[in-house]
Length: 279
Image (cartoon, rainbow, N blue to C red):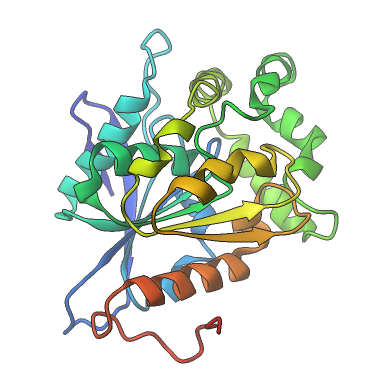
């Protein structure tokens, strides 16, 4: 499905819902990282859609969404506005928001600027902006070699050696479909984001899941979240590279559902006993 953003660009989205049809709906939004698309959540949806109306959108310039004109400036406020307009399109005032990497930067801004839209926030491999990272160094090799070749050459920054080779090839094929010029613009924008000083203003319950290998952003970059978000739960996956939502999907969903089962008031959603519960 698609809707037109207020500037006329086509934005693609998908809705999956296998929750009990006689119960009130709660919406869970999944927002993908840079260079990705909504299909990257394929292994998350079957479990989450048992409990929520799961909605996924392709960020502008990604997946099946339109690519803005090359001469048009790309602004964070425009990316956040796309999310607001998407929630309005599907009739949702407030959602549980889950972001991976750049998707999490956008959702942090949504939580800071439009807190009424964010019921809970879950951030996977998503620091308070990408300024404290090595991402600015990606631009030159992407421009010179192309996005797919760059990512193939740096694949150990994203996946451990034991990852299923089929998943790695699918990942490379999927990211290789992007427009390189737009991705350079997108990554450049993300490297300008730094919300560390604003973390105390995120008031909703927040889950922060950290890939401890620090292959894109160092673990210390997450400290403003750990110290300053009032209601924060922090999980660290030790010594693993950045793309945890792909090769550690089961663990990520376990921790997300555990977090939500604690933060959603009793009786609103009945979670299965099989969900891992920490003592």
